[in-house]
Structures are given as structure tokens and as C-alpha cells.
Image 1 (cartoon, rainbow, N blue to C red):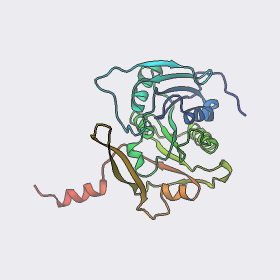
Image 2: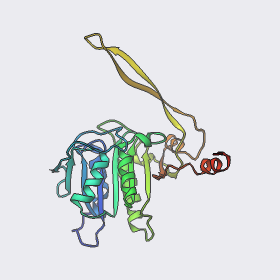
Image 3: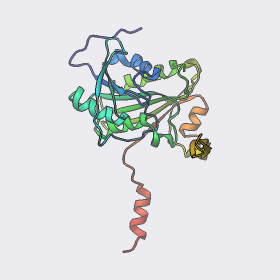
Image 4: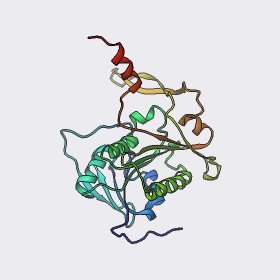
Length: 264
């Protein structure tokens, strides 16, 4: 196994964060997968922040505390959201933009519509906004004892290729999902589009001991997209899915149509 080289000025700086918290096994797996590729610095939430989307902390102070989860890897835990972690890392810890920002490995899927709600992907998108190439990694397994071998394998391969690229796009942002199967059973990688698939949600209404109503969010994941070029299709067929994403939410075809049809 490759050993981590002593840091040099030429060594790329790799910022790693997540939304499951600084003690999550998926974060440790991602650190282990890429620590030989550059100088790794971890800045992650001090508690789980799943489903936070692109939230930032306003009106409350943020705190950074040194963490010692990763041996000789510099690590910090942040009291804020995943996006806060990226902002603070660049401004107060690294004092410069890293060469790449990695987020994950998330415990659970971030394919299809999940990308909008995901704290994992919002951290990656925030880095992209700041002209830092970024990748969000997710494994389709919510278990704390999940097997991250496949995710680690493809994280190493992908990050190495991007760092070695001579023409890396500073606004690169990739959403990578890995099927929950043994590494040797993964068929390969598919570059995909985001599927039109979502949770059909319901709120389970219950009563507390005082007779007051409260609600648990429930739902069933439904794929409305039968295309064979989507992330859901790739994952269902044991491929790693890679979806290039962007922070520009403009619907350009609709923009052109409205320019021609709206009258004022």
C-alpha cells in the first residue's frame, strides 16, 4: 500500500468535509483513500448535518475545535453546517483555496433529487462556487458498519486522475454515488445525468403523552425516469454513477421560450 509522502510546497492540498459528522466512518474511509495523494486537511461538522442542503449559520457564532481522529492528519470539527465548514476552512485554516475539495463518503444515497437536500453535495457545490474543483461521494448504505472498500477504490482512482489533469476546470463539481456491493462486483463507472426520481412523501401523524399532535416524515422513493443514462439506472445495474453538477440553476431552454412569448 502506498505510504503518505512528506508534505512539500508542490504537494496538492486536499480539503475533506462531510455532513455525517467528524466521527463518521465514511469520512475516515475517504481520508484513507486519498491521504497519499497530497496534504489532507479535514474540516467537518461536530455532529450529523444530513439534509441541511446549502444552509449557512447566521446569527449564531461558529466554533472550530482541533480533532484528533486521523493520526497525523490535520483535522478540525466545526459547530456549523457542511457549507460553513468549507467557508471556514478556506478563510481561517488553509488561508488559501485548496487544490480540490472532497465531501463524504456519505452514508446513504445522494442520487436524483437528493442532491438538492444533501449537505454532502452542498459542501461540494460551495467549493465549486469558490472556484475549487470538488467531488461529493456517497455510498448507498446507511449502516454505520457499511463496507466502504468500493467507495475507497473509486475515490482514489478519480481523485488521482483529476489532480493529474493538466486542464482541470476550477468549477468542476461531480456527484459520485457507489452501489452497496463488494468492490469486486462493481462493473465500472457511468457518467450520467440526474434521474427524475424523488421521494413520494407522507407525514405520519401521532400523539404525544399530552395529546398534542406531532409528525414523522416518511415516504417511498419512486423513479419516474426510465432512461438508461441516469444515475439511478447505473446504480441499479451495479455501476458507480458520476453526475456533473453546477450551481447555475437557469433553465436556458425555458428562458429562450419566455423571451419570445412573454409580452409586457
